[in-house]
Image (cartoon, rainbow, N blue to C red; front, side, top):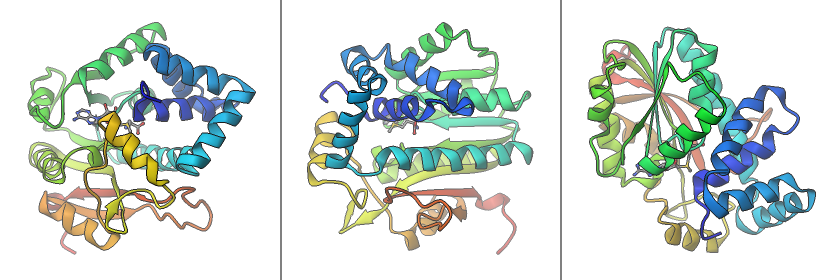
Length: 288
Ligand SMILES: C[S@@+](CC[C@H](N)C(=O)[O-])C[C@H]1O[C@@H](n2cnc3c(N)ncnc32)[C@H](O)[C@@H]1O
């Protein structure tokens, strides 16, 4: 597990979840092409996912680490795709996806919305792998820009604004899936504040960890997982109770509009502990 990052785990889950599902085939292809470029850890994950015994082993590992995690990823991705499509149908002409890892949302949004410009931001090594994977798949990337930025150290908004294809005057949907928890809370707020100030009629779709017994974590997370995340250099840095999400967002200029209900009777979150929400720029929102 030492050569395995959380982005690789999500990608492996995407490959597995995509088996036999035509609508997810492209996402799975991209995740696979990325994992093939992620060294021994990525290739090892693919060997497990591709073999019946390997998949059984992964299920055991998941039960020992965080039961329901792969189902949780699928749950949040379904909702994010739905909200992002709706934002595009409502006029968003740009999508800014931060910490996208090996996820195919940006690529598929660009295909589903023929005028949409998509910008993804992640660390340089992750971006390099994804660029290569997209090239191998002969993906049309004419409206998909992959930008390198360390969200903790760099001025990510400057990198975005400097891109010749970016237009801060266009209505924009921003997605921060599974990433804000890895930044210090104040840094995440600084980033979201900059987005609220720089973008026109922005919509935000994002996730944040819940607090459970005072710690940012999934409810069913086993104790050893925290140490593994620390050693990986990907500890959850902060969390937020449900009642506090609105106030946390308000500090950086966003208004909470919707929260995905983990206990949805028709489609519950298989592993609760990460909030998924939709927000609008407070300045652009009608008075409550
Ligand atoms: C758990 S993965 C989630 C990937 C993707 N959003 C998804 O849900 O499928 C976390 C992602 O955040 C990115 N990330 C974490 N900290 C970052 C930082 N300081 N700067 C840029 N990207 C970062 C990682 O590189 C990784 O791609």
